[in-house]
Amino acid sequence: MGKTKNPQSVLLILYHYIMTFKIYTKTGDKGETSLIGGVRVPKYHLRIESYGTIDELNSYIGLIIDTMQNKRVSATLYEIQDRLFTIGSVLASDPKKSNMKIPDVHEKDIELLEIEMDNMDAKLPELKNFILPGGTIAASHCHIARCVCRRAERLVVQLSAETEVPEIIVRYLNRLSDYLFMFSRKLVHDAGATETVWEPRM
Image (cartoon, rainbow, N blue to C red; front, side):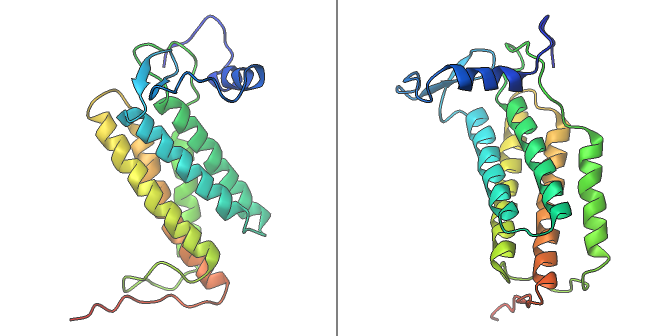
């Protein structure tokens, strides 16, 4: 991403914007919105759909956090929320027009998800069958978040076929969906609940 003479991040700029102006601007009343960099695009634009889905995913992660009692787990989920805000900022920026400093996703962010998954996998029973989503309320929220994450990944892959998107974003979303699946299993296991095996009707 390009840099500006002003070193403040886009998040500080967005915060200033929110604090300075009314929540409604009426600039989107005709079905268009602005990317970071000022380019106007229709609200059905693939880039808008991509970062809008990231926002939807982030909201579900917040819902999962609200069911948590474990502070260490909550800290990991807050870290994920932060990364999703970073991804949203990248996707909301037109790479050809914006010269603001945008936060980055790093390899260590993916490594964190992999370490967490390895730790969970070591304590969970071996998965030998497909399981149906559910088991506990929190686990069901995880499954919904997993599905939204997969949709976000598909949209970002489609966007990357049309324009520049950092490859690490696709990898992060792919790994995050796996993490959410593993986490849903852990929640069911920790609650002493039962995973429902899918038994296809033949």
